Amino acid sequence: MVVTRMKESIMKHMITGLVLSFGLLTGVASLAQDNNMAPAPDNSAAAPASPPKSSGKHQMMKECMSRQMAKNDGSTKKQMRAACKAEMKAAAPDANAPAK
Image (tube, rainbow, N blue to C red; front, side, top):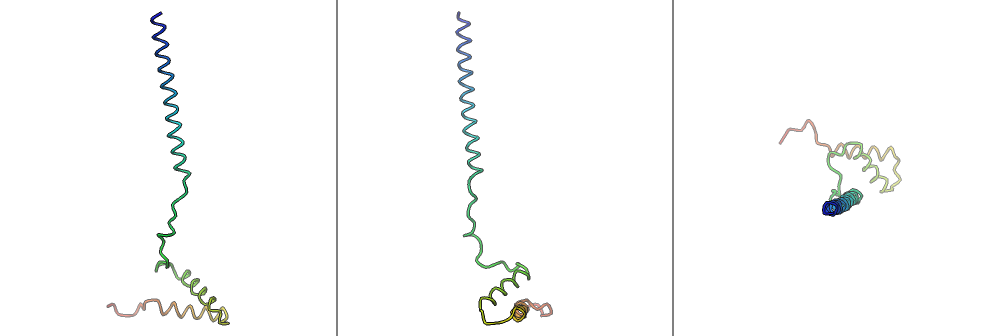
């Protein structure tokens, strides 16, 4: 009789431990899943307002063409492209200029 009660007590403790362990693991798993599902932080405020200087000639040309089109002065695309090329050439450092 004493052995049976001891076995019952041990079984109750084991079952309680398993239930608590399962509950704990389920809680941890749901927290981990919630953290993975969280939206990414908005980094737009940290982004610089102007493009970096190393954005490339293509990007600079696109931006210049956008500015030329915004002027809406009746220029043709060929004229706008020529103006942008001149602007880019003037903005580019002269490779033959002596170093200061």
